[in-house]
Amino acid sequence: MELCEAAKELADRQPWKLNCENFRADCRQLDGKWYLFSEIGCGETLVALVNGPKGEIVDSNPVLLSALLSSPPQGLTSTCSNLRISSVRPISSSQRATIYEALSQDGNRFLVKVMRRADRDNVEHMVLRYLTDAGFTHAPRYVCHAELDLGPFILVSEYVEGEPAASIYVAESSGHETVRVEQLGSLVGKAVAELHQTLYACNEDWCRPEPITEDDVNRWISRLSWRSRWLRTQGTELVPRYERPLVLEAADALEELAGYALESAMLQVGRYKMRTHGDLHLYQIILVGNNIMITDFEGEPYRFPALKVEKEHLMRDLAALARSIDYAAAMGIQIRYGTSLGDASVISSRELATWEVKAFKSIFDSYATRLREMDSPLASELLPRALGFWIIERASYEAVYELTAHTGYHDIPLNAIIRMIDGNDPLLNYVSRLR
Image (cartoon, rainbow, N blue to C red; front, top):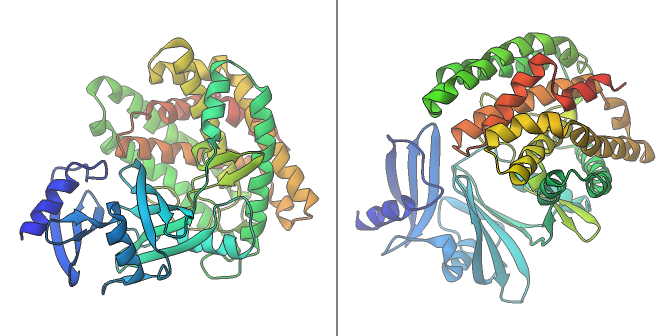
């Protein structure tokens, strides 16, 4: 079909194309002029809606996008029937999604996120809608969404303009400065505490808190062993030959850490697993004036062997922030000295160890204080030793993600995992001393 060939050629030129040699392309008519284009390979399904007769990607055209959302074809459901879009401006495009700034006909600005991977366990629209209904003020307001039979496809939310927290942390680490990150960390910790308290009150099946069982903990621990094996068998094939010893050393360290972390992980039994942010790094946090906005509730991509819909202990979000601080430190050192990212991730753990601890301490202390101020039952869920387990688990996820997504950042988590087993990771050492 000529239209589908045109769509395939267009997809091959996009950042969201599949990163594998063997895949199967498919194109099926949904209704009238609308076609669903997909590519299946590498364990993923790429999706895009195209319009005949030229195979144009629908979301890049405001007229087509409005028509699609207001009068969805068979195979697409939409809650956006009243939305009329007059213009769209691409903001970013990655393997997983294309992001647009959209202007409606009545002059309002929105963020339009178009998913490029079919992902049935993506609950971002549900989280954002719940937070909006609950009056949570630290996340963009939900506007509407559209779903394909393959999973969520488009999410429209409030447009938020501000400064990414990550940019501030990287700049401050480059100059070895702590004053601004400690001030910002206090705001971040407070906002995350309020997020967790709001999510804790959710009473729907997808978000309702549940007691943690030994089976839960064993499943979480098994992620470490699974990822260790993955690094040995697949991770080594995704790096140049000279980097394979680093991947193998991290794989060995991770397997050893799985045994080391079991006791601390088991402290969570009887506590609560709940809906959390799921991928809370510093680029998901925007400073808008003096307010913190938490964005992107999709969860972790390439989260093998876990699912995004899994509920976890709230310390998981704190662990993701801790690991994000390590990334910021490495990037700051890279800027300061002009070194490779691999060398920077080694230097930063020595030169910025105190900086990393101060940066995370400001978040953790503010988080704990805010929970107590709210008289939240989650204050009793503060488990520093369990936080140590989740820092290890998050680093294991990062290693798999960075290699799978070909980001070039894999040295940061790989070096961190090796430091952890050697007892030289500043953040893991810090949380192990907390009581």
